[in-house]
Length: 215
Image 1: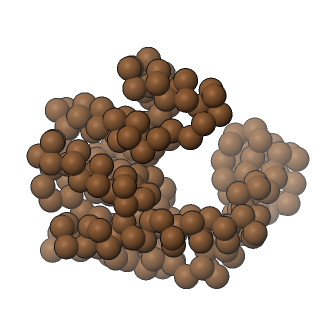
Image 2: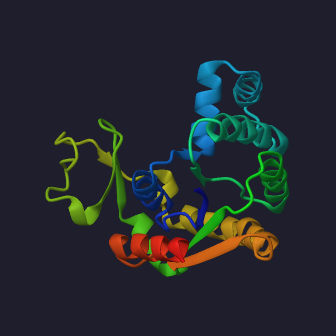
């Protein structure tokens, strides 16, 4: 079972990826996971990525493709699939991933798209708070006392991340619309595209994804 999950920031990709990972007993991997793991293991690509990051530069599409290839190749020989989150984000990356799939003989991956209106995403993300102690991301609705983290119970550790400021969210949505949506157009006549409303209750979103896959 190979799944590539898409969605705008705040659409629920991480939440659904974790649920599906447990459901199908396959690993959830993201570009961040790939980079950290490769750097930690000191692989050839990990060392190149580390050097690039330490220079303050963005990791190139080709290098990210090499890192994805390395990770999926290792997974492909050890288990029944994966959930890929965060790659591809551009048409160039989509072409790279297509070549990776061909090399690894991955023929029928599922592309899961979590749809959400911009106003809902802005509202959802602007309600998030992060904890400096346990690093959890929580929603204001879950905070009984505005000064206490509901996850670890620490006092005075909650703050609003810059990424969750409305102006930043709106810019991220523009970037997603401009660069990532064309990726789906690139894949639509090549693979299975599953579209689910990401703003529905979590269990309903999960059910919708699973039902579509089982069909």
